[in-house]
Image: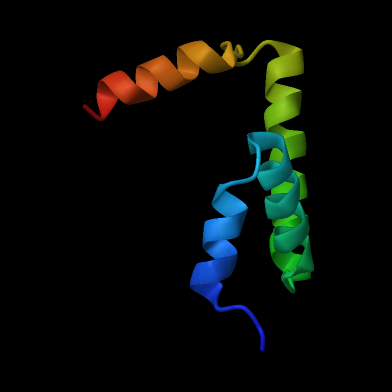
Length: 74
């Protein structure tokens, strides 16, 4: 008999963080993704990278970005 979603979820939540992350990546990649969305994201990534490289914007470290977001939404 197949496992229920709840049983699978309980098992997965007991995995170490790295294993859960790997599983998430595999599950997401198994979904059918609209090629148009993928192309739009690729274009957006290139645009943002070009802005950083030419100095139009500057990157901030991840922990600082998260701290700013937490402060904004608390």
